[in-house]
Image (tube, rainbow over all chains, first blue to last red):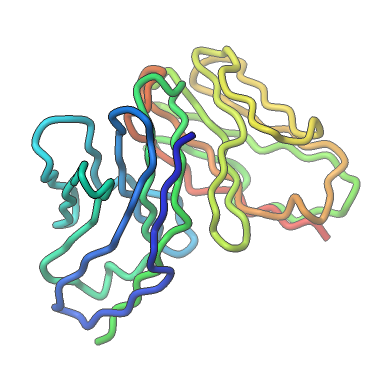
Length: 114
Length: 113
């Protein structure tokens, strides 16, 4: 069975500081990995995804993530955080043989200090 | 033009009532989903339809019945609502039957009183 762990429930960073959100996954085969962002009262928006190939993937809003198979990790990064990045971030794992079923982590709440 | 639209956005109802949530996508996607997000923001898949055919049916009380009249629409009907059904319900869609990433609707906040 697939699973996702986001070790940090809540992270606070200052505006302009760098950000790294951690994600660890468990999946028997090659995973498809995703990061989503949820602003208050909104649905989830796909930030980026990894299927294969280059292990460093670029997404929207200046985010990137790196797939590390040896560590079963897919951490999300941003070099300089803006106040508008405050939101809930979800990592998810799926696969192309999975009938489209993604398993989501429990989320990390990002607070941005002025 | 909203890609995945859900109605209503808010739903407040009494225990025991029956209610429906509607979802429509204009992306031409083949697969649609219902996810439930509880008060702790945990997301759990409920159902998935591919081209009107049910392909995922997680352990959900049979008071919940999805219906897909065509591949652009997926509705969720809930009978005999209970307090524990209070949550945010998200509709999503994706291309094909593999997991290529979802486009989510903005959610329906259901409150059962």
